Each structure stands twice: as structure tokens, then as C-alpha cells.
Image (cartoon, rainbow, N blue to C red; front, top):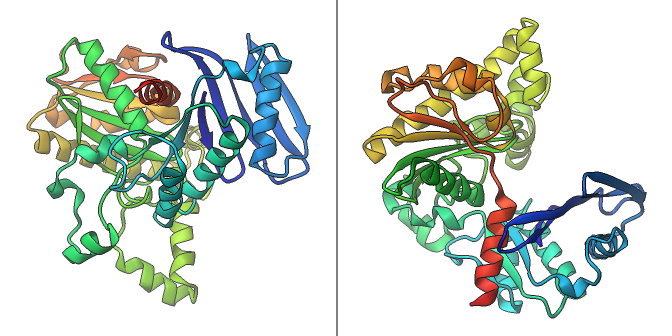
Length: 389
């Protein structure tokens, strides 16, 4: 079972391994409320129940009872491993790891660097361990894939002691997605000596430069706020803006950080929405600020890809993935148009299609792919590998 626990939600998938066949998926939402929702999808049917769910423990029990109730499994003992997505592994975890009390405490301690994510991830782990105490539980970190970056890529121009004493450095996120997509790109190209850029563009978004299967650069940093504008995040800005706007608005630096995380990006620029579908509709209706939201993001993504081209000394493939990357031909075209100097060109008709495919033109010097991501499969693979070691 692959699990992604948030502060008020638990997403899950049950997979048959090693065939990597998805058996069922679902989500528990609004944990802590009287009108919480439990959704489970099985054999093409979707079952939704509204019920009070006071905490994650109740949510986990609901999931396991639901699996039996809907005849997904006969007994919870059929679950042979649980893999948990954990956002921040710091420099402590260079690989996925079997969870024991020490590991759980380390995940909680790293929560200071990812306060919105690690505490929720830890809560999910505790809940599953309580209900399935004899089943191997594995932590799979967003940051692990990026641990192959060298110091010139992950250190900031801040006092070196900030790094040695406080761990201030670029960590990167969406690692399971970047790993899955870059490995799939190598399969499609039939080789591993490659230079690939993965564009994971969803409400949260990041890029990675992957050389010969190893991450050498990524756009997110110490937190997921660094990089280019996203659904509600600003991406990288002049850090002095925080103190300046704190004085102008007479609010704390933390409140400014909240604005940069939750009220910027598509939402802040357009004034309309953080949903790319709404932005596209508004662009078609002639909304200038909606177009500006896409323009700013596309320009900055192209900037990153150009810098990765230089850093790796070339480029074999650009891969689009995640909700927007997979489903927005408009944004893909806007990005690739800005990379014409590198000899990258889309096939206009292929770019309109969905699903895993090559969308670059025959004459393009760089291949462009749509590759749907599958973070749950990566979590399941690592859970199987680690629990059997």
C-alpha cells in the first residue's frame, strides 16, 4: 500500500507487486470534521461515504475496513507492506528506509524544515503502525532522488556555517516523480547515458536535470517555495521583498511567507484562480492577467531548462508530467516556443493528444515527451525492495 498523508487527508493506493498492477485507490478527506469523506475506487466503481472522522487513526481504520467491505481483500493480513511518502528527509536519509521508532523521531525532528508536511506524514505513519503493527512500514522521501547533486548545485551563497550548523541548502522535492519519469524516458530512448529535464508541473511544480539517471540539479530548494511560479506559490523572488512588504503591510515575516506560499503564482498574478484550467479558459476569453500568469511561468521554466542545458553540456529529452504538464498543450507550447534556439520543436498535432507519447517534431534536436507520472508505483517499488532486504 502506498500512502500519502496530509494534515487533513490520507491518499492511498493498493498495488499488486511485483506486477505493479493497481488494485484500488482512494482518499480520506476533511479529517477532524463531522462531514469528512471517504472515497474508494474499485473495479470501475466509486464509493463515497460522508461520516465524522476525528483523527488519522479513524481514517486508517476506515480504509482497511473499506478494503474488506468492498471485497478488495479478504483480510488485512494480505497487506504485506506499507510505503509512506515523506516530504523532507534532509541529509539524514539518502535512501528509503524501514521505519522504526528512531526513524519516526527523525522524521518528526525534520518537520521544522517542512512544517506543513512532515508532521502530517508522521501522523499517518503512527496511525498505520498502530493498526498494522507487524507489517513492514517504509518511508520514501521526496528529497532522496536529489541527494546526488554536488555542492555547487545545492549550496546557497549564504554563510557556510548556515549549512554546517542548520542544514541550509537546496533539497528539492517531487523526487519520486522525477525518478519515475526520468527512468521511463530512458526506457523510451533505449539508453541510460542521457541528459534529461523533467518538468513536473502541477499546483506545486518543479524541474530536475537528470544526467545518466542521476539528479544533478533541481528547481525547488530548502522548501518547495523556491523555483518558478506555481498554482499559489511565488517561486524564487528577491529575499529582501519579505522584509520590505512586512513593513509596508505591517505584518510578520511569517505572514508574508504565507502569502508567497498560498496567494501568489497563478492565483496572485491572475487574480482569478490557482487552477490551470481556469487560467486557460480566461486566456481564451482575452484576459490579459491570465495570459501573464502563464507567460511568467513559461518564461521562467524555459530559463531553467536553458541553464540545465548548459550545466549538463547538452540535452536529449524534455519530459512533461503531473496534472498541468500532462494536460495543458497551451503551456507546453508556450515553454517549447521559448526554447527554439536549442533546436527544440513540437509537433502541433501530437501536442494536442494526451497519454504517454513523443510530441516533438521529426526535425527537433531534442525529444519532447509527455510521461504520466506514477509516484505510487515508485513508493511500492521501494517498499518491496526495503522490506525484503
